[in-house]
Image (cartoon, rainbow, N blue to C red; front, side, top):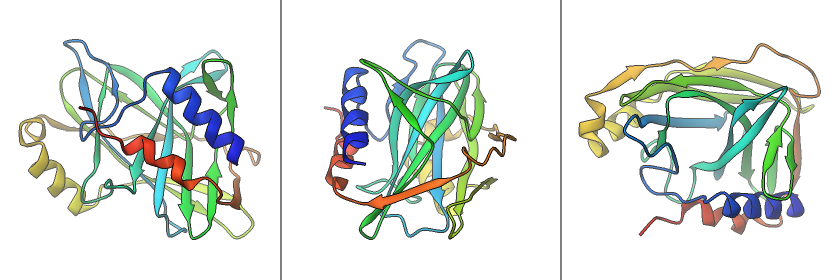
Length: 210
């Protein structure tokens, strides 16, 4: 887990990962859209939750960013609103830090200056300009590590927070429900849990832009 998190940190720094209330940008042109990004592991008491975002690249998914969606200032009452260019995106990984352990769903492959994933757990498509509600992507982990994924409605406190924090964007809110990937391959739908040794590395994801 330590090497995994360090590799994630290195890859993210190489691709320019920064976080603000508007989130890391995946599109800076005039067609930029906005997405309320919310995910959780319902069966764990997660102190922090981080997801991997990617785009399809042949038979795999090219890693774009890792984003902190819960912990260190972010959560249902202060949701992550990200900037995206129009197109289709995939949630390729989720990591939950709880107690003294870290649970990870989704295997990451680290290259010299990039990361990739073999699986997608959910996908969503965004158009230009609007604020998109893709729902809450919720993972369930059984005692034996088996995983189930569902899309739920955003919590009322999340909707209220977005309306309060981003009133102009909220006027352009559209429903764009994420699609849960139907592949139930047992190797994919499995969570690994290890003792947390480097949870402090998560802190850099919440560093605000100046």
